[in-house]
Length: 527
Image (cartoon, rainbow, N blue to C red; front, side, top):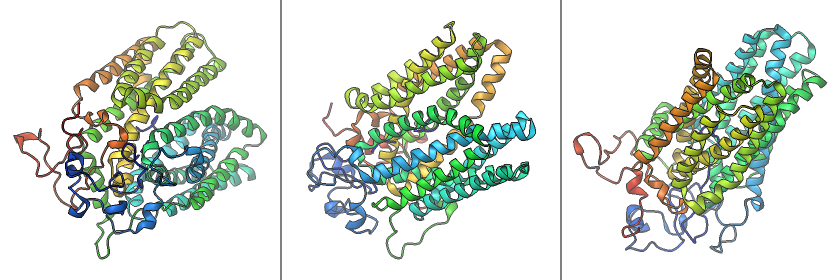
């Protein structure tokens, strides 16, 4: 899901070695059983237009590309080794973690700097808003670029651009009396580069992690980011006291780690080259193709809408969380303690999510987490002490992370590599385009009816979201399938209409299997 999503997870079929994460289907390494309905849904045998024998890419790439897509290194067919033994994943995990730490530091330092330079809270908010606006402006374009040009190049160049922007901020502040318009412009430039970089994250993860280990990787990265948030805020304040320019230099240097880690990754990051002579469509047309890919999947449409509303409500709770502590008589230290407890809950959820999904199933985890998260909304409005608010938020964040792991893992598994950049970027764009409504509405409600009543109202909205899950059962049918057995959606025909679903107006039957409840449903005769 998106922020606080922000938490993605991917594998080959049960008992099979992990397939190349960038390829358009997975298999066991054996010719598909002609009686297996899943093989028929993929288009029959490999010779009939499915995946070529041996897992070769359908895009005309040779074995070298497939060998680099996160498959089982030893080819034994056993469960892949721990992700911590996957050197490419370690490069990716570490480089992003250090960069995220730098960003957390500068996010604290930027408002402090603007308050020092101007004394205006509005200007402090403006520079933060410009960074967010920059990210939003390039997310959708970056997703399309990630599916047509070198993802490694996008990572390296966008990270270098962010490093230059933050380095320029450090230099201006070091020289004294920095120009406010110049700082605003550099913040916007940093956000524009960040949007391009973020749009590549999902496709790169798909290439460096075996499909069956995507939930583990997603949870590990979300846990890492929680810890980074816990460390980044006090570190930013500490560095700011050393020198106002120091946090920005720290952030500039942190971006270099992404560049270095991207260059160290041995696997091809894609995208695969189009077959010889195939004409590429324009950038806008390819962005539309990403939207069409979402529209042809009931699961992707449902989770996009549901996740955007959930994210907006959660952002509102983030503000009310601070207002409630103030309402209960807590000061800055109480806010810090409660925030730390919430982060601990996120780490616990990240550690527990993969095991819960394997033992309970994705649908049960999603449903239980949504109801528990809704309950935490109601409870946080009723407890009398600030430390109790922190404990309730610990429970809420423990549930929020598994929700993200489930939704993001199945999204990454369903979408073909050639479209994953556009689909992930479109999802993030939708989440971030509406998330500002949450804090704004929460603040207005808190002023009008009081923080506890406003929180209970948001809890009611969360209950409605939890109720939507059983009513959307048909749209979430893919969650009943183990992640390792989920098949990718077929790519839409370029420029062609989206196939009709069986439930489309007029009752028209689709020409082929269009929806993921057909493409990825359980084999006939299965319970």
